[in-house]
Image 1: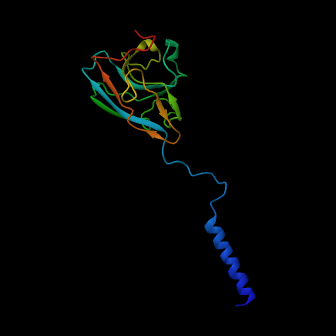
Image 2: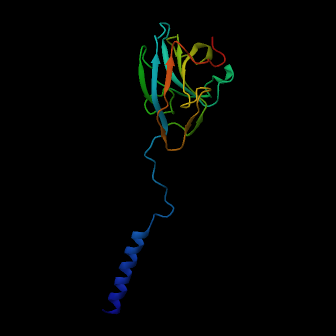
Image 3: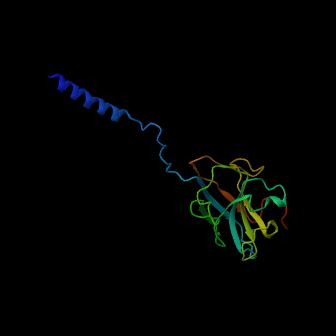
Length: 176
């Protein structure tokens, strides 16, 4: 083999090795395929009150310790309306938000997830207009509302809530 052929062979092998071993250096990591958010099932027990006009899942960033905590800055998600008389309702934050921009949930910790009902046909965002029919509790602990923790690029499942019309949960401050 001539010197020129050896040099050409080494050059070709070097390029092949370089291309095969390149991990794209500092290029950005591929986008996650998972949408950040949550889903679950709501089970309604008992007879729906005739006065109910609207039912929604509502998520609050901070706990509801005072009636002033029920405000637009603290509300991070309101689902589409849950049909009256439903026995079991499956939901997903991917397809059920009525707040623009919450289709993909922001990772973080959320203090209060509830099924709230209203006797008005209009969506009123004042605490006194709502009655909490069900609250998300951490499985196995019904002593206090559970925290919804959503890690980055994670879709959390099984955020299940029971709404027992015969035994409603404690109401946050500021209600009727």
